[in-house]
Length: 123
Image: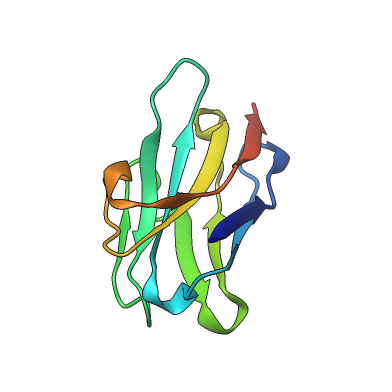
């Protein structure tokens, strides 16, 4: 059974930084494309960023987070990271990591999901 566990969320002031981690167990991590999505209260879940499997040679970002956020993966640790810099109040949301064979910007491309971690950015 594949399990994803996120950590690293919290409360931060605008302009600050956080690094989220997502550890994957029970599967072959290097085979999975990984993604981060977020959902704010009253809004739909939205794509944040994704990284391809194996070497992670390709990454994609939502326009709203480009330059500020960076996704990376460490296959030796079965972990994907989301470095978030220059955080804004509008980044406040529950952040989820996801794993799938294909990846990309659509949530439908992901099979496995974590429980999420809350990120709150105060102004």
